[in-house]
Image 1: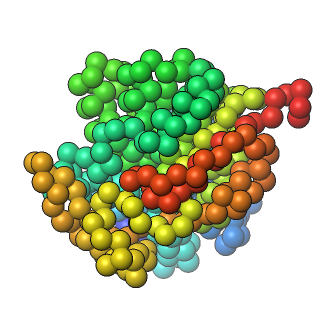
Image 2 (image 1 turned 90 degrees about the vertical axis):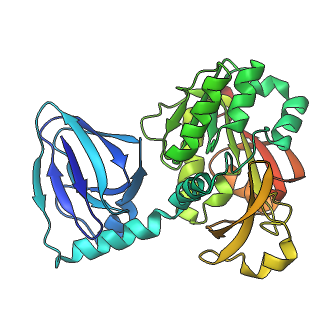
Amino acid sequence: MTATIDENEVVQLDYPEPASLTVKQGRLGFYCLPDGGYSEEELREGVTVIGVGEKISIAAGDKLLLTAAQPHTEYSSESTAEPKQRSIPADYPIVSAMCNYVTEKGYYFGYEDRYAKVYERGASSWEGTSENASLREILARHPEIFEGDIVDLGTGEGRDSLFLLSSGIGRSVTSFDVSHSALEKARQRAREKGLPADVFIEKDIIFLRDVAAESFDLALNMGALHMLDRAEDRARHIARVFDVLRPGGHFVVDHCASDWGRGFHTIKNYDSVAADLVPGRTITRYVEIEGERKPIDLEVLHYSERSPESLLSELTAAGFEEFTRLDTDTEAFGNSTLQVVRKPRKDAQ
């Protein structure tokens, strides 16, 4: 079954058999209705946004409410039995509430919109093609933590994963992001280098749906966590990383510490735009197009800053233990802190 849904429209799908649902175009908000009704707080907490390429698993008996986070969102549903479908009247309170929550909670998909706009402008890259300098540094200091199965969370255009793959580092590399535009760029580069392209997968790193516990030995978050500014999103992401790491596994987090935007290679003059680095405002950034740096007006997206101590506190609150730390100043993230924490071994838990 393939269907299209628009903003401010809510439909209910009742699934008699297990199924899966995949977004083909746009972005989709969904909520799994619990038995016995729901509260306003449960609705707000439970509404989730998924983007192009991400698949969700549906159990027999699940009742889903769906709405669109973008006009003309298309999705497909695969099941041995077609779900029962009905439209929810527009004047029902749940319609406006759900649509509002989808807008509120889908903020980090703004990075997909940014990638798409940059490519439409003619740029071949937003991030650049070289791996992060801070990744090279932590690899040089602690190569032993890179020997197992690695997951790159918020890989973007895949520069760090491509570096690891081309260097033969790690037993395996898996890369997740919500931006299908950036992931397609990563796949293209992988194919050009003769590297596997299927390691780049559409998946929301907050939830890490359908990722089994204890799947990886090393998780990398190179500049994605500071794109999450809702405390509940950050906490859920960190908790899920703890789940998917094996005991003794490590979590590497590179996060802006202060002065967001200072030192970014896409910002020519930080002082001239510093006052406008407020989410929702528009500033001029610079991208490389046919060998020249050219201006492009882009919306300032959500971001967060954390001191080294504050970031470490977030990570240890989820059960991680301190391993090491670097304070860095790179063209990717400016003034940042790189924290490496470890999931305790089972004999220490």
